[in-house]
Length: 517
Image 1 (cartoon, helix red, strand yellow):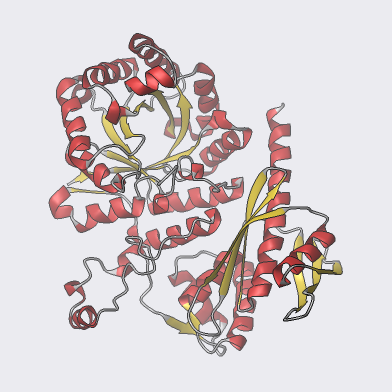
Image 2 (cartoon, rainbow, N blue to C red):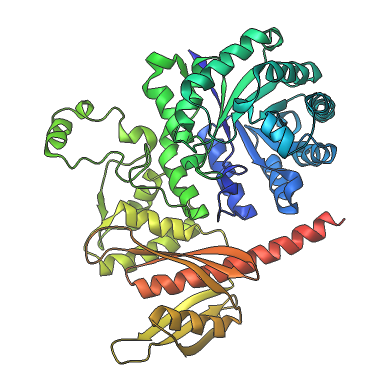
């Protein structure tokens, strides 16, 4: 059985999802989880795009020891140099992924170059990349809309220049499984040097027609041995091929594909939850593999079948992807050991200090709720693992609202030194009053651009989650808060957004200072 290399681009293409911006600590957290999962190649960023992306790729290259660390670069000399500098700490595990447009529509309207100019550019830039690392990947952007004769010529040119991996991306999600698979078969036939030099062919599919995973698997069937994908399928426009779907399709239907991966599948669900939390991109309920309904059965016939023999209606065991068997887990009489055991079984690794803090919040929650669900525990831990070190902490909240009453909120905060502050404000509603009071206390003026409420668990005592997006001088950040009191959750989300804004501002100043040396 062949092994398919998993090339994860969550930190590069995934972060290009609208509204999805990750801080350096968040990227590092995701990178470490991807390493533990067994991901073969991590595309850590696009170094030339910003100082922050350069620093992210460099830091990930320094900290990780197992996967190949890749930096993206256009076929532009300055891009190649920047990527080479970013991946340098990875040593022999560093990869430069360089690309150039190949389709007629891109050549005519985007880069405005002839085919001859593109061939020359690809050759020179791949050779330049080889001067930094022997592991060079070349992509013919918009390959699926490229003439086969020119595509074959371009691939041969890149391989002769030193490319060891060739990616044929479906950049705009245009292909169908039949045509995408046929392209790989045709290139292997037309470009003999691919086999002669043992070049790895790679897929990179977008989901504009909902075919990203199907196309990726079709590529595997016709010779691709690397699949580029993202956790939860996040990415530009409709997203990328979802890592979890590709991996579990290969595992579940190994009899058909005759191929597998190095991924530790029991880490898929925890990784999905973490990426969802850090990016603010909620996983749809009916999402394959990791959605809330993926292993749920409501039909009486289905329930009866699963109870008699799981495989009658489940082709995968939920525990294979890290979904715990239990539903109800803890209550107010549960101790630290039981709580810690449940946290570990859910796939989290916390320090003793983090466990203690999360346990204290759990006991507070357990006093309010008769039963604490897995989803409650996950929410508590996710909140505990928020990367930003808050300058402010919500210490108290009192709200007056109702018919014929002016909504008024009194908010108490603690600064990083533990000093208490309190102020009150009125607003158009209770949430507006809360946010006005927080702005008065922190002195940070931001505009609310998105506000979402979600019940984490069921019942009248359900934990509520509030996710917000705010704008500060054109800079958008997210905030998240959880509580059985939705007004408190709203306040927590707003404070988290302000803390994140301050954290990012400080990081950007440091990066700018560092890059100026």
